[in-house]
Image (cartoon, rainbow over all chains, first blue to last red; front, top):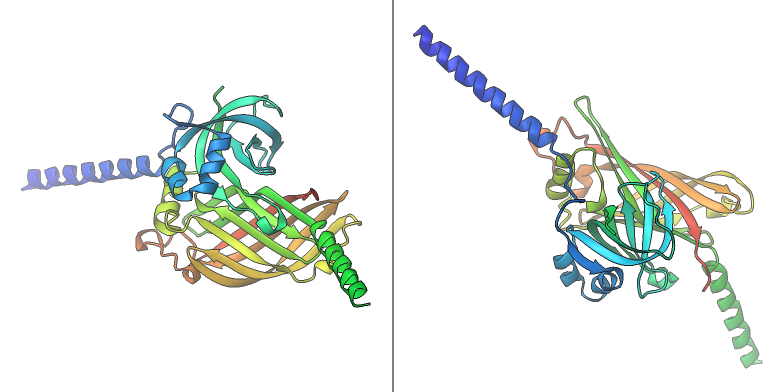
Length: 145
Length: 187
């Protein structure tokens, strides 16, 4: 009887420990790997045009996926969290593929041709009436080339 | 005579449009953060991909953002936020559209901090609600930056929190908006 109780106690303790470890691992799992992930290749002009001409197809092809987008750097700046912002030129004046870099050590400058790898978070329309076009946003970017 | 009046009207109207257009400021990398605090856990997230347009002439103000661009310290929090609470696939964007009701009190030619009143509509999770709050506009060397905070009651936007985590997520979330604007060129 005593041995049976002891075995049950071991089993319950083991199960509780396993559950705790699983919950801990799930809760603390790392963010999605971007740098080494497989990516969908595109260029800034095609990416922007696909979101503005056929949003449904663009979402299916790019949204929330790791993409490698090539393009000409239109401007480089820093956001309020001191992350580097690289704007890639599109065919629409004032509109960009707006890339937030994961690391700030990139010596990217205006006029460079680059390939940036990051997660495509989608398109925000601007204010057409006021002449401010929207951007396609790519986050957690790395310089790929 | 009639023709002269019409021409004068066109000149005045086009002038006022140009003047309004000339006071247009925008950013595509504004920041929105939210903060949930409970005795069990504090949760915060930032989104640095906020598009905002501010018209200093009329006071009209708008923000829009993509929900899945919020970055959480923990990946699991981010996943739960997008999949279970905000349902970002179904409701990908959140927005604010409104006015700074006392924009006239801001003097663009004078550096300083100006407290302003903001009224408008927040659309989130497919629900639109009126809000009013105060904000701070900072003018420095002709550059404009603005901040504002307001509380969002999750129940107002039909955001359901599963009972298993109700003690970890606050019923009302503090939202903070911060933007450094650039002037829209007139071309």
